[in-house]
Amino acid sequence: MIDFGFTLSKSSAVNLTNIDDSKFNALLEVEPDAARCMTCGSCAGSCSAGVFAPMSLRRVIAALQRGADKEALSMLSHCMLCGKCTLVCPRGLNTRHIILSIMKIYNTAD
Image 1 (cartoon, rainbow, N blue to C red):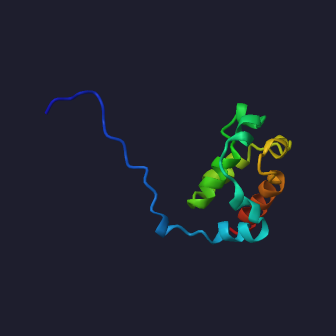
Image 2 (cartoon, rainbow, N blue to C red):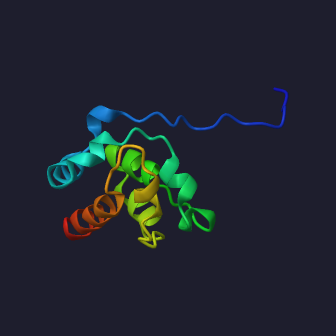
């Protein structure tokens, strides 16, 4: 067989039927605005921590929805809670409260 110098990468498909979303549902009970995020990227564009570390609230919410709790908490560990994301959110979400609620639920639920 001829070697063309590339390999196939593993599928990144996520089977949503096998995800434990109980923690995300608990978050929605405390902070229903988390479901109103339209993933526009305004928060990521204004994030002071995002310049230096992989921090994006929309990526955090997406990770939590697909059950990637450790990935989301790793991103949140870089958050400085400066509040810039709250100021630029077109939906007017209290992103700081969402972030604090995520940290509280996911750190105490283990």
